[in-house]
Length: 170
Image 1: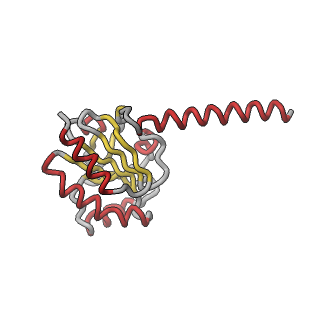
Image 2 (image 1 turned 135 degrees about the horizontal axis):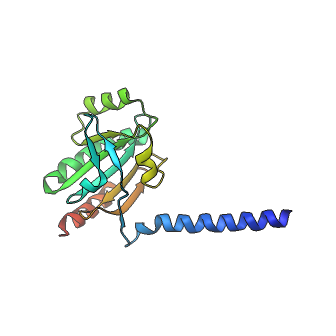
Image 3 (image 1 turned 90 degrees about the horizontal axis):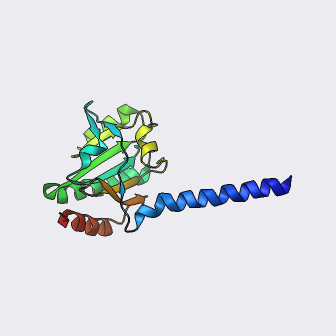
């Protein structure tokens, strides 16, 4: 019985490793299309991932209860302010467990200049690779391809270099 369990466990572990390697493969030079998803913005409007095309976009999954998220938000605002006129967009997606009133209050009191969405059902987080850790930020190029994923606060100097490179691409 232990032998069968071990074989099944080892096979399962091998499959998990392969899945993990596949999920992270786009972090190198490979680019993967942003997943099809719909975001519900605070004003009730909808934005789809297909509408991200044409701009370099940061898709930031965050929560008001996440201290790292709250701490990085001024840097996300500064990054948006620095590059928005050149074609950068930012979409901050609040996690499903975040009370909508907290998200609205946060966005209003901090005067967030970019779009804010609430992922009420968790569908967007699942579509973007089952995001569970916040903050998680995806960098999407003008063609709608995911170029990089940051789990935790990004190195903003490195992020700015990447944004510069992607904005320069035709």
